[in-house]
Image 1 (cartoon, helix red, strand yellow):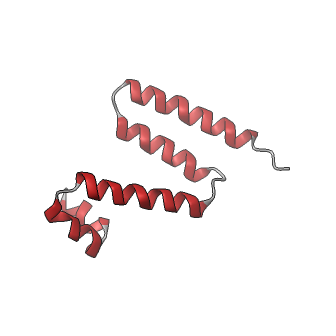
Image 2 (cartoon, rainbow, N blue to C red):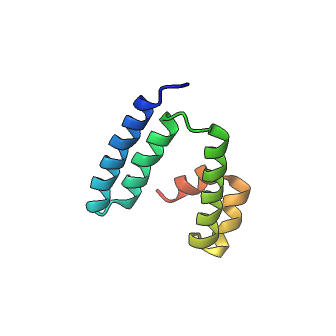
Length: 85
């Protein structure tokens, strides 16, 4: 049986860092800290990619203006992000 204590410890530290960031009102920073911890963990990479893909689809559908949504699908995110400066 694998020893997950190191992974659990790093996730606890990340959660504590994320809680501090959330208290400071930095929700994006909070998400980045948590995401970096999950990526470093032993989480199933296929499950993680699926969850992130679903999140991207939700962000595009709910937050990106309709006239720019096709750009996200055709060109991917990098050109869109670069155009935002």
